[in-house]
Image (cartoon, rainbow, N blue to C red; front, side, top):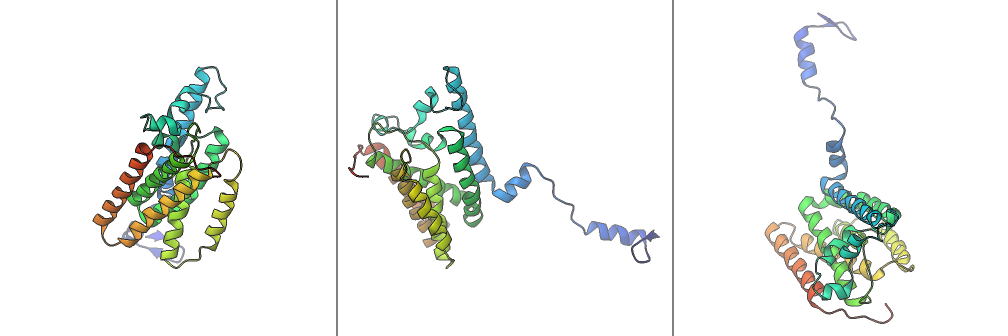
Length: 252
């Protein structure tokens, strides 16, 4: 017999009781992925890796690695409208994974961790990644159409604004209180009015995130239509971004 807190138990009873108790989960990457979402963590890892690579590139040409934007690689990957018009189409994608210094990176990655993990939980992995992608494209289209031809744009902010919009659509569809989200969005829009911050790109990402999520909500029970709708939206945005010449709108 085995001593217990009250009386004694037979060895068989002890064994059966232990077999019914789940072992505590280990920590590490698996636990982090379960809490924050594997897609969100992967996106953060890619952004951080791009910062490190551009920092090394800056150091190799004699610049401070903290000023990673002063690197040949950064210049090759950032979005510049007239260069996209000239055929360097990849810039509309790669620019969303570049950042101007560590502060810009950290702020965007914190926002991605908080809002991205929540959206990944609500939408699932592929839908979340699709919304993130079309938000990038929406911001790129807006920059191509309405920013100066020689303006240099980079950052995950366009996608993060798309996540704001996506979360707002889901909350409205679920009849949740969106006042807190709207307040946060207004604050960020005001911040976007500061010099050096691209309000145009942010609004483009926001609109694309809203449109993509509306497609997902409308066809929530028809996965094939969700895929088709997101694909059509993405293709349309790519065509506009790379095929329509840059148009500068005065006053924006």
